[in-house]
Image (cartoon, rainbow, N blue to C red; front, top):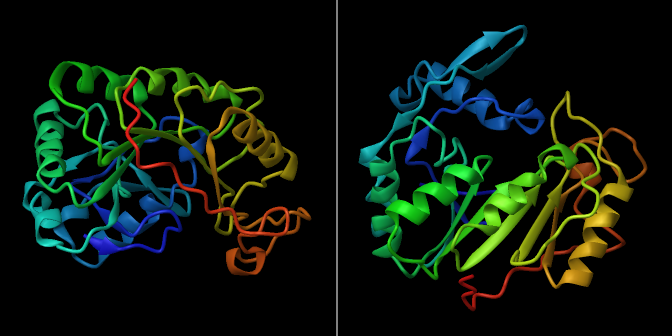
Length: 260
């Protein structure tokens, strides 16, 4: 487990390593580059999980379950918001349902933490939780990534998942999402892509999400402009900052459980 610089969480916990590209939002995933770097540094957990494609490293589809990491949250006594699997997807098809149940057991036994699980596979999340997870944990938030209108069906899949908090990460936002139904969604994170080959974000795409969050009562969190600013100019992430409409938007969902 490690302290995190991600604006909406406190720490990361990676019981799974490795993944595969599924849609356009995965194209420039930071975790692929980081996994290759950790492999080069001799970290066995990340060995052989990427391949070279041109000048960059990409996932090769191998996934590794790390049983040794399961006890880590039990040793962390201070309450934290913990992003689960920043280096993978807990609901990847190669992660066994038995291992997912083991992760749930840890989260059940550490109720002083709040866990945030983000997936691009909400259909498998719904299947596993409905068949293998007997209880809804008030300290576990479940979310899905939506990068453009082509994958908004993930929101309907997420709505099928029993959860205390459901959230959507509109990041990297690489296209308009259009009208979306946020019924049963308590939190929305919006952010642009970072890095040398980042794709642009448009302010009007953020505007439509912001407006819909306001109308539908969903907490709105603006994470970053990333490499492209509101003036459509390319700069460093730090130079573009986090301000939207002249201020920071750091709304968080209510911790009061919402089961349906």
